[in-house]
Length: 266
Image (cartoon, rainbow, N blue to C red; front, side, top):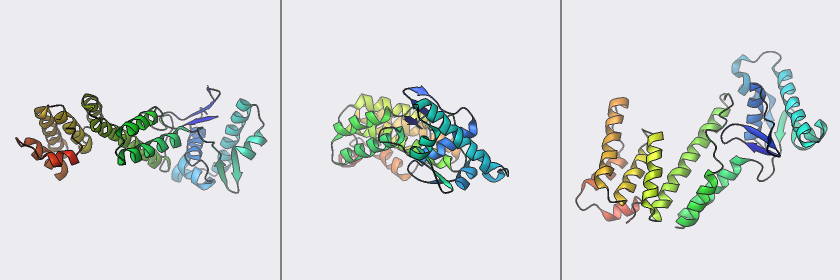
């Protein structure tokens, strides 16, 4: 069985998609999956699905949703509902607990590879960091739970994963710069700037990458575009950190020590 949450929620058995089509079933399965290995109380699930507008029949409806998910799992795997309830999607008191094996779920695989890549980068092994990042990023299929309505409990999970994905992509730029693969770093950083037009860190990365490729004027133009966009749309100025980078790049003889510490490839 394979559980996917990085992109559309998907439950696969032998590559066959058995994901529930009913919205509330999907929502229940999504929260139970994102808390795999932990008990998820019925009140928690009811709060996610109905918020403060739960009907009196909410608990019965939830039990029906879980029962239907179990039946779908049982039919797809050639087992019984009783076996699924005993081993896979377990009732534990007033809670449910999903058992997921190593490698069955994309999220922990992605998280582990990103963490391993950070450790590799910290020990100055940019080659290994890039290799691990590219492996991890293959797990990403788009915004998490894109086909699920997310309530106040699922939404923070989604936001954390989106931020982790952005962090992985920015680290990939840093790894490529450290390896001297400047043009590839420029291309990746440009994509990030397009996707995140107000994110200062990705603009700083593009500035560093362009400067590393010998395009100082283009790097300064990136800053100016960000500054104008923030002033015109948000009414604020860029932060001191990116202002400092801009000031250094303006110099005829930039502070090489600062640039090296900033990740600029020599």
